[in-house]
Length: 333
Image (cartoon, rainbow, N blue to C red; front, side, top):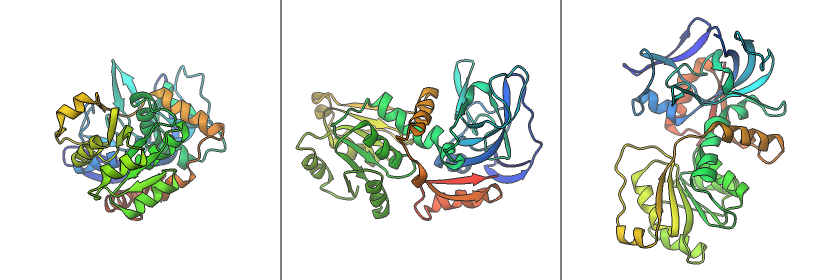
């Protein structure tokens, strides 16, 4: 089969023919129909991220995967050939979470093997291209909003970075009733997209009066919750200045740079918080699939382009160049 493989020592990425895997006991072979291209994949290729648990030097990328059950392994009774499924972005092994497409082979391939517990059935009306992005591009902001920030209805929220995660953050904040929702991004096209996804207003991060504008839009209260989806140190300083009393800043975007708070006295006086966030849990993906099934969510605007698996490098390059300002690019084997 064809697979997009990364050598993590040399950081060389290539699409090549490899043997089709076979499912072991308790595993399922899935015919991949769609796989998302995430900035995390790009960071694996450029060396910003390194797998923690990978056995060997080479891995098939891709942690956002949807497809059809091809072959259940020994002892698997729940899944049968032909069922439409998405795959959780990872699985727990010996008390730690291994990430698909990072610590073990992922879905940039014609077939993928998954533990039976990591499959989630999807409704017929949900296209594979949209289902594939739920396990990260959607579930990560959903978990950040509902579990880490505990965002509440009619409480102001800010989103820094209106990219693949941030625009879904806007969409999901609107679903839970946060108000107003303020998006912040330096790119005009990103701000326009945030408004289309449900932001009440969108400001440039380059605006020297941003904090005053945010307080003006919130009646002087400031933000109850702010989300850094960009992973940029300057964004975090800026977001803290926009928090209200008891406000929470949730760090979703990843960076290895230090976190600093300029006015620690005010931060403590107003009892504000900075909370780290990473990924999501299985239940968040299940919740989102149910919300789609019930007609509460629509991700048709989230698929910015579909490329054949053989052109995976082109998809990576497009994401790096932000060509067309994509929300998510999809690979189709």
